Image 1 (cartoon, rainbow, N blue to C red):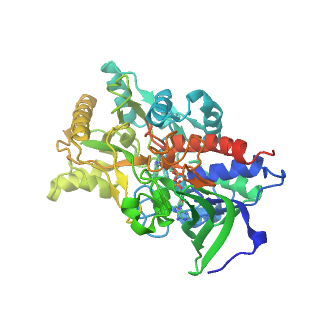
Image 2 (cartoon, rainbow, N blue to C red; image 1 turned 120 degrees about the vertical axis):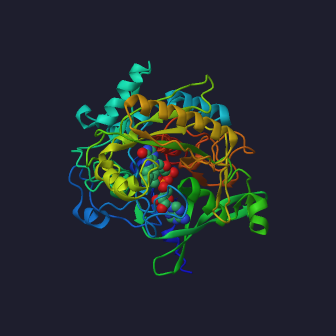
Image 3 (cartoon, helix red, strand yellow; image 1 turned 90 degrees about the vertical axis):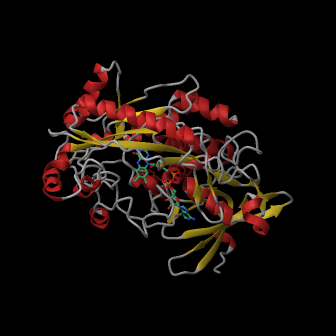
Length: 503
Ligand SMILES: Cc1cc2nc3c(=O)[nH]c(=O)nc-3n(C[C@H](O)[C@H](O)[C@H](O)COP(=O)(O)OP(=O)(O)OC[C@H]3O[C@@H](n4cnc5c(N)ncnc54)[C@H](O)[C@@H]3O)c2cc1C
């Protein structure tokens, strides 16, 4: 193992140059100083995935990056993604890929977070971070003329049902809606904003960034029942192992990656780690929330979409909003905005299975097959990540979720029918997938119920900070990326005030 000499000691090591890690790195490097002497900080950021370099240039992109990741999709296996769901492995993390639905946290999200674990994260404290992220990602509605016929039919139908739809906010910069991004693909021309702008700011302010290195563990020295951080150990591309020391370590490896790395470091539930336990905390890997969802597809005998289109926008509504904001289901028409690519159209439940009928269907399916989707945003059902095996255990077939989603599917069918669909999918699966995982290292005021305090400091390990999707005490009432970004922008302010301000 390569050891460092004392001059190489860092003030802060950030593990994971993803969404939250990059935002915090930029802020701390720009405005933080060493508390004891006011000197600039020595910060190292380590990322397991590659760095597709090049200054961000919305509307054009960076030639090298464009050439490297033209239409790399989030399903791509290997170097770019982790074995667990919804987790990209690269500098920029999961924002590089995200589908671009950009909802800021609602007031109810703050209420949920505060009620769940006692964090003091009220909406008024989030004002500045939210303004920052909305500005940075240029969040808003898209031009009306880009909406598909299906998008417009959806809103007209909802209005005829007495529902006032809201637009799905997206983040786009200088976008000409070229249609090359599809769903869940990179934007080759930097129009889908991602956190690379923060990475650039971090580097300009002295952060040393090493990509393509997987951190194997955070070094924790045991002190009684507690621990103290010493540094990290990581594997370089050539297979050599390196150890670096630091005063503090911030883990920002995502909702799955963070509990798994902490488990590998001996920090986690005793019943999983056994004699490898250095510091016990049963909340690590627990309280996993996702947003299970279902889509209903339909075939129309007129065009609801264009042949090509950048998509993933439209409108949404909540059919019911209980006063406590729990189990809220969201319905949206974003699957009406981008073309149904042939390979997907061929497999839809509305596709005739054989022969001439299938051929006739495929001639127009790209434009005439569209979906509506419902998801339980604030499901009360929770799962777990095993910090040793990395496996996820979420009760997808939970009866409460199933009941709500079957109800959602009925509403989706009714809307399709009112929109004039020719054939509507009738079968609804009884087990549902979902995304936007949160909660596996949740923040809270009680160490027995959480992993970090509301200031993002581990309850149990001194000098260990954590911030990413895992610290969010509940899922939010919409997609997760902007809540993660605003949490990171908020965390950065707290971390600077608490640790990196002179005196
Ligand atoms: C295809 C796709 C589409 C999405 N669409 C949307 C959307 O439309 N709207 C929305 O709001 N959200 C969307 N999301 C979700 C959202 O983007 C993510 O939830 C969010 O970015 C997560 O941020 P994070 O900081 O928690 O993790 P990440 O951004 O994933 O960052 C974690 C980083 O840590 C690194 N890492 C992990 N382990 C290690 C290790 N041991 N050593 C070194 N580095 C490590 C990872 O490689 C990664 O770069 C989408 C996600 C994907 C993948």
